Image 1 (cartoon, rainbow, N blue to C red):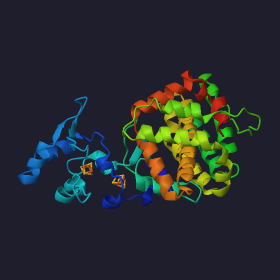
Image 2: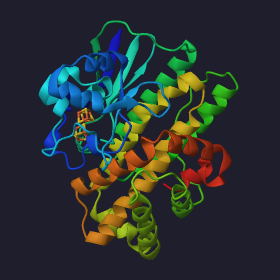
Image 3: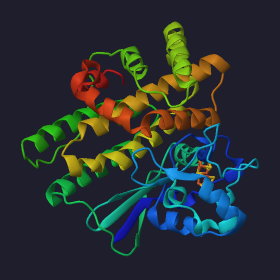
Image 4: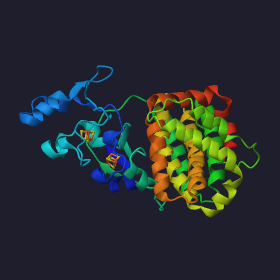
Length: 358
Ligand code: SF4
Ligand code: SF4
């Protein structure tokens, strides 16, 4: 089978102690795969003792995990911000999650797709700073299993994803918003086709006649999501307040910083690449496309608020904001489920309303 990944995937290398906000101190439960857990169990000596003392059962009892320390750090994350398992046992003895992160994978019949996730600052830097059109590469790898799916639907969505990425690749700072509107409308038609077992080929149409929608209702919904970092909600509330009092300056900011739309374009392609084809397994693409659109609309406001607050905004500011957003929203399974439900239950999340945000 083939491994298919964005060209930027090859550029990723963890920056370890240079990382400002390491994933080893993110407070996540770090599950240890069975093979590695067995290996750790038999490590002798002083370091073996430390390993055995710091491993317990995970929250649902399905595997072993590391006991986080009092600051919610991995117990093997040392004062120099380096991994003691890596130092003492070598990279090959990191557990699967630590080896993979922030890489992600999706399995299909003849291809395993991969990418790097925005919750890592180095991955976010690579993704946001892309100036070349998004492109992918393939290499041959040994076969791996995948879940069952309908091949016809897979090919239908694969063709649609190529079209969407192509449209975004060809969009620029001026027509980025209109591309997102067209993509939303196009996906709405695709979903109707899927629901009615049709495989009609659809094309994009320009959406110039639409009602403007209010991002604040979407922002308010975000306040109902479970925070991972206790500072997140206050930060988000401050942004709502800043936006409320400064929205009139938005168009000046957009003129001053056309590069922001390039960052947003790269982020939108990331969401499409990573999530759109998951529709193959559940025949549902609305929640995937909404996640992209809502994320772009919210990040746009968070970037703007940084500019209001500091009088400037840099690539590094955008990376920090995107990383935090990804950790809080994208990498929290419960929040993703709530956002997916919102598409069907909350009027502000329907496609017509989302079109009005762009
Ligand atoms: S967040 Fe990324 S760069 Fe930082 S330590 Fe984790 S994998 Fe490395
Ligand atoms: S085991 Fe090492 S790489 Fe994994 S979370 Fe702990 S410190 Fe980080």
